[in-house]
Amino acid sequence: MYSVAAFTGIPNACSGTVSGVARRINTDTLRLSLKEDEAACELTLRFGADRKRVRMEEQGCGDFHGPACSFDGALTRR
Image (cartoon, rainbow, N blue to C red; front, side, top):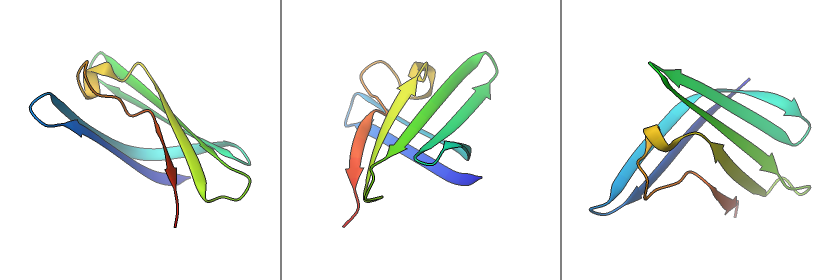
């Protein structure tokens, strides 16, 4: 299991954060599934072969950050 935290924000528009324990789906994929009251959010993190790049995709996370923001994106480790 892996600890994951994601943050997003646009000044004067929206912001959001999610965190929790993600489960390993396969050798290059982690999935974080959250449920609060009636809201649900799923983040999928896919790592590149070099393990320096990760792509994050969300499903159903609008209640966690508002309509103008997203947890979708890509990161490259230096």
